[in-house]
Image (tube, rainbow, N blue to C red; front, side, top):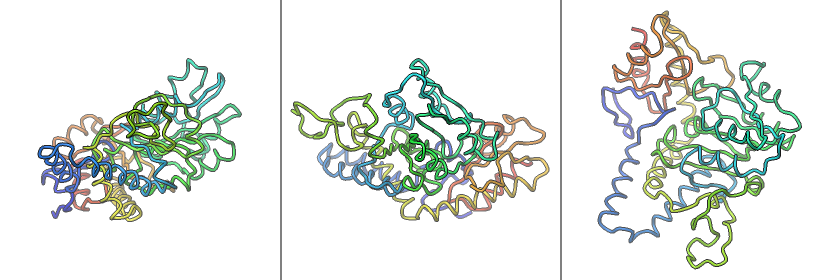
Length: 373
């Protein structure tokens, strides 16, 4: 089998775990090695060039999100940090509520639940209880709803929501709209302007092919002004290179959420990874990712031993495919697959496959064959 030149994975592996932690492309590995070698030989002599790479990454994220301006992009440690910025930046009033779903990853649940001591209620919609997931969310909204927060794609079910529909609903009612995009950014096209999101956040280590420890936080300018800061440091000042800055001012842009020194190693790595996605084009990548998911779905549906748990009839197809074995429990099936070097995850009610754009059809069919045998 011919491997993609950017993903020369071990020949024994079938890697279907991009919804967890993805492998790095060749260019990303090379960028890290080059950066490490440069440090080893020259230290920080080229720091001004590193700052250019940091600026480039902000512009790459702005392009990936279709953000109006790179000034709306903050580079954060992870999704949880960005969600906490929102949760603890809003001036809540007792009696306020937040609407979300009952399928959220802890990152998009715990920060909101922790506001209970401020008298803020966290409402979890059963996404399967209404004609659509969107209606299930809307049914919990009332005059005290301040924010609606949702994952663009659910980590354990693969359920995908109509962000533009939700965004329009929120804007009509003056409700802040927050999107945990970690399971869609890098595999399906994303448009913050079309969905009218106030806040969007995602880690770099899943579908974006980047390292752990660096992610993105988009905030719309008007929404950003509604957030009080919860962290302070030199890097969030308006003039970060005036170290005698007395008195100091908060940075006017999204950089205000970046407390201290940037993770330059991860910045070089993630910039290299995003260059691959942007060169290929997200609409092209989305088409191939969803085709690969459809191959898995078709193969699973043809098996008499396997049951598809994902919604194959959704109007919004997902890159996440969840299934179970009719005779084996989920943990036994998962151990069987991993023993055969099929890299996947045990999630929700079954085993989760999450292919990216570079897979060959034969390896996708082989993975289902191993599960079926």
